[in-house]
Amino acid sequence: MSKTIAITNQKGGVGKTTTSVNLGACLASLGKRVLLVDIDPQGNTTSGIGINKGDVAYCIYDVLINDIHPNEATLPTNIDGLNIIPATIQLAGAEIELVPTISRELRLKKSLAQVKKQYDYILIDCPPSLGILTINSLTASDSVIIPIQCEYYALEGLSQLLNTVRLVQKHLNTSLQIEGVLLTMFDARTNLGIQVIEEVKKYFQQKVYQTIIPRNVRLSEAPSHGQSIITYDPRSKGAEVYLELAKEVIMYEQAAR
Ligand code: ADP
Ligand code: MG
Image (cartoon, rainbow, N blue to C red):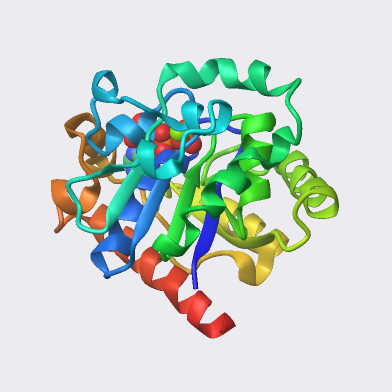
């Protein structure tokens, strides 16, 4: 069984990229075959896992627009079992270039279908928008993980996101599910964080992961070293919680089967 998960929230800075890189790395460290797909023109997942964008021959842009086989655009990382299809700034043009193409919403789905069997998990790191790249990601996925930052205005914009998920379910991908809602950057010293957790749990109920990601400075340092948290500082709190999350993700899949 292979599962494709979009990590999405149109808000920037909520922990999508941190979650993609570190959940991917942790799933791989637990023996899963994982493909990260960076579909954000900022390419933070790409650089965060140690890929020098200047060395990238083919990126996700070539897969979406030039029909390059995904395997040709796939690079290994310094973690066994973890591969990536990188993104470079070239992808910024794709939003516009995709507009006049036939079945533009299905491009990523069709491409990834060619490699799905090679992986246990494909994680797609979405851009901070609900544009055509995010629609492609939701159409290509079995489910979505929604990271929510434990801050004021956490729930703002969520109804828009959920509406987009519903539209994709209705018109493009009837089997799309909400995999889970992940609370990120929790600060136990503030009442606000606790309030946000309560609010999010009221809204999403059992869809909220038990694992809550705290603020951890090691998590914010790791990308500048081109490393996931499990190679940068395996004994940090950040490594511990993302490993817990990976186990939770695997557990839910086993329970569903
Ligand atoms: P997004 O991809 O949603 O824009 P990022 O994952 O890039 O969000 O996170 C935004 C910023 O917050 C980055 O600088 C990242 O290093 C930092 N960050 C993310 N999660 C944590 C965390 N749990 N603790 C501390 N810093 C974090
Ligand atoms: Mg990001």
